[in-house]
Amino acid sequence: MSRASAVPRTPREQRLSAWWLLVLGGLALLVGGGVGWLPAVTEGLGAVAVSAAYSWALAARTGGRPVIAGVLAAALGLTALVVDTQTLRTGAAVMTCTVGAVLGVMATVPARRFLACVREVAIALVLAGGAAVGAVGYGPTISLARFEYAVLALSFVVVAVLVHRLGAGLHGLGRRGLVGVVVGTLVLAVILAYAEALRRYGASSLVTSVLDTASWMLDTLGGVPRPIQAVLGVPALAWGVYMRARRRQGWWLCVFGVAATAPVANGVMNPSATLLEALLSVVYSVVVGLVVAYGVIRADLALTGSRGARARRAEERSAVRPEPSRTRPLL
Image (tube, rainbow, N blue to C red; front, side, top):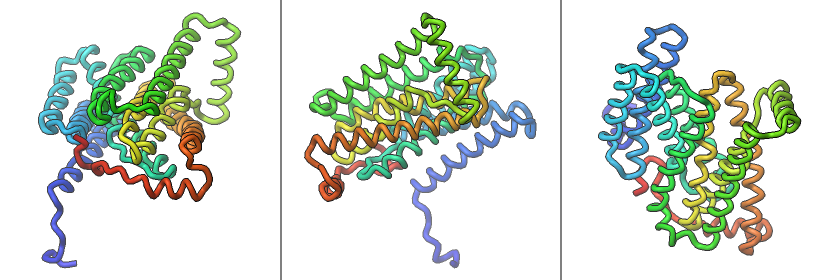
């Protein structure tokens, strides 16, 4: 094709290409500095690049000011590197992982069919994983449990604030959305309470049994599914994007999608686990979570009168609620 006949790229396409270049370049600097191919300082610079790119993307997706958000994130990251205190480095890592977890949920689009739900879950987790890998470049010193709770809590708060606008406020919940939010909150509370009680106060025989099971799965399968992802995060995100193709209240279910994206950072940050183990744990969590999501979606369709393959196909054709594309602002 001649140069004259080439179609010029739009400004949006140029910005998207620049974003990918910044993210991939930042990850390349991080990996190069981490394995010794490049000077050690490039590892931190790669982390700053990833933080700036993700903050820019989240602001652009949520109708904020991308340039200001990207510059501010870069300034905070550089400050953490220059001042070089563990508090600032850990704070920058938490910020990056939180932004990645939130962006993973916000970057999803409505899914008319279940296979599209699988695609959206995969995209959300890949985005969260990129931010988690980038955060490693800050070299944080963490308590794994505190780091996990901090990222999860901050992600929930940020997504809830955004969804309050996207979901037409609390009055936009509706009966189905209210049931989903109440059940999701109870499941989250039970999982966190059980995990904390098991870690601190559990009977030795029960703790030993759980640890033995986890060790067997790690040795045999190479990874252990995380309950918060498999039971809550992945099903909520898949069901949420499925419902968003039909009703705005699906956004409220997507709030619990950060229970799928936020724990990705914890797996990457875990010094006792390899990246392969962290990846396999996410894969197993996704497989279990999608099975749960499929059952929930089918039950939802049955309760609303869409029984049988023909009724489901008709329901899918009628799911035409519009939303902006993945690379356009939601607000």
